Image 1 (cartoon, rainbow, N blue to C red):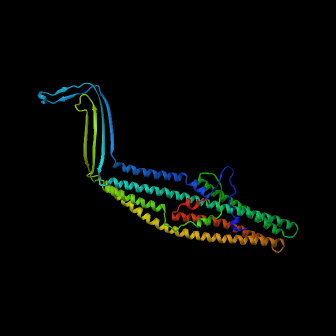
Image 2: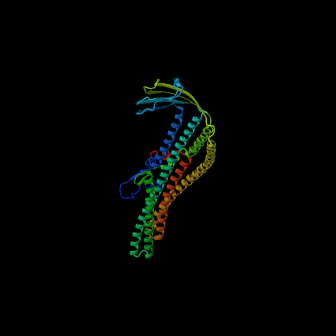
Image 3: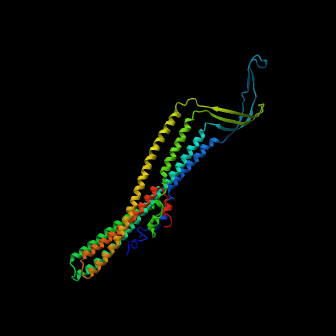
Length: 432
């Protein structure tokens, strides 16, 4: 039996009740539809809406106003003394009347020294940053899912190794007990074999607990009750063929770059806050009142508006944005250095994990041969029971090491994909 043939492709069901056995692509698909990813998408959509808000200042603004009122006692008019030759003020009472008014006003921004354009640029950069942040959240969720899957996979192998070791130890105990009854072996050999059986039972219980814990994490990420994981053949060979030597596309770096652009544009816009703004305003109004001479009138104006002094608010805002930009620049540099370190560490971990897995597979083959030979020698009376138990101990440890190495390699590959900013679905979700 080889190491690859030993490792099970289906997980024993540890939970009672309904649940699902998931492949890695299925786990990723479910996790990436979870609430964390959806919340990040919603935040990106909200930032995209801010771009439309900023661009709205470039478009004409149309306002409509309507009013209706009734005057039960009109105060009338007072004609000043001397008007029309009257020697004293003359009161003219107009009486009761109904008045309806309507107004349509159109305003258009003509020139604001590109303040609106800079605000749009800032909004677009912030929207791009939010989109990159959504991708970063997606990467984090995907990485956590692969890590949980790796832990479940490794725990599966450890449990299977513990169960097979327990089965072998129980068989050895049966044989030794029969030989002790026949007087061929001392009682101490039976006690040693019995101790090993109990030790294997404890190892299986610990492996079962670790397995259930990792499946609980996977259930939390996917939103379904996961009772097992399914792993296909040739999984690591397929992952090894994925090109990972391209440019680093970390969404965290994109977030910081876009935030820096947004702060630059916003600062330039606030520097123009007190500059003059030119706008055109026009419209038409209509009044239904029999006392008015002209009931329909049009109007138009060109307005030049400038803020002479705002108490230093704009200058303070520009200084605040400049400080934020400096902080983002420093964080971007620190993140770039961290990415270089993570790439180097991920490469080293993958290399070490592949070497450990190869060594563990060879150790399993050697341990299986050792158990076969010691079993033959024990049956012929050429080996002691302790020799056979030690060989079985070697095989159990080797199989557990294979499971641990496989989980470690999958975890290292996930770390490498995350460090390079690659798409987890493209790497791990290709039907493997």
